Amino acid sequence: MRLRNTDKAGYFRFLSLLVIIIFILGIAAFLLEYFIYDYLGSMQYLLITIPVVTVLIFYFKGRQIFEYDSEGEALHFKNSNVVLFLNKSLNDEFPKYKLLAYDIVNIFIVKRLYITINGKKGNIILKYDISYLTRKELNDLKMSLSKVIRNNKEQKREDIS
Image (cartoon, rainbow, N blue to C red; front, side):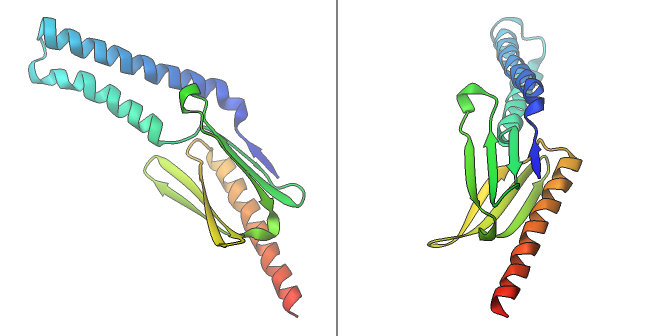
């Protein structure tokens, strides 16, 4: 099964540009209010707080682009960011039989996928940002990973008997 949300990259670029513009305008409005106008009084700090919170939410939500491919004998995960200066992408590929477990953690607006694989030095946990996946894409991902794990367990039972 292939899962990718690269078709939404234009939307994510627009969203990141909008967040940057809100941040710059918020700082400019705060500086003007603080040094020149002073109309809002103590409420002027909202002009800086709201844009900073918006930037932090966008940053902590994680990488926007997620690609998953389970066709063939290997699993391929790719997680990248559309913002150029934050472009630290993850790219992992490993055989299906190494997959031991997965866990999806959902904390408010942040969703993370933790993959546990069997490595040479023990179990390894890989982390991917899946906050921008739709509910259908998330269910498809869960179904595919569960199927791989189920097939791995059946294969181990056959090897033991």
